[in-house]
Image 1 (cartoon, rainbow, N blue to C red):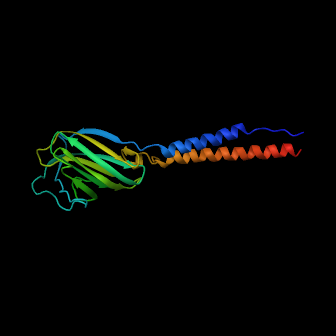
Image 2 (image 1 turned 180 degrees about the vertical axis):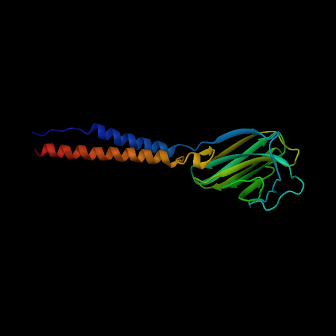
Image 3 (image 1 turned 45 degrees about the vertical axis):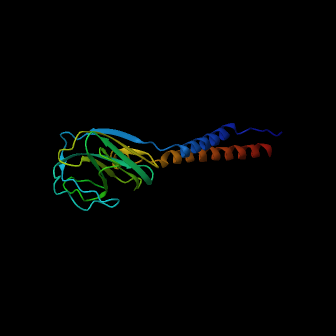
Amino acid sequence: MKVFTPPIIAKTLALTGFASLSFMVAAPAQAINFTGDTTGAPTWNRPIENGSNPPAALSDIDTAVPYQVHNFFVGTTGAYNFLSTATFDNYTFIYKNSFSAASPLNNAIIGSDDFPDLSNSGFNGVNLTAGTQYYFVNTGFSNGDFGAYNSSITGVGNVTLGDVAAVPWETDALPVVGSTVLFGAGMWAKRKFAQKKIGIENA
């Protein structure tokens, strides 16, 4: 006697994993927004912007400019946009791997004064690498420029404030990996059901 047992559970697992995988791949990157205030903040000798190249010189006049720094990293390698809007004439910088106010030129990637005008500073299309520590510095043009600001970072992947080591598994690829594992488990279960069915039919 032939018995047919439809592998409903196996199909459900496989389809669920596939649907989850498709959803995770299509999920858009998340922008991040944060605020700050450099009033009363530590000061530094501000570097001078150098176009799309890393800053190569320090200001001779603006040697005690208040600043704040935000550590961050990205989940996907690619281009990212930065914008800070302030209540003062602001300036921004990005650093890679480490940041020290005592050595303002070390590890600096790029700097920006007016973007595109006074009280706005930032960059478009800065290429960042996933899993690398970065630092976004908000500061002023001169020693007397300080106050509140709003910043945003957007790009091809998710942006996380904090240190990479604090969340070692934070990456845009993890949801895809998890869904792939689920999909594989479903396909394995489906094959097991099929083998069992063949055994019953041949009995």
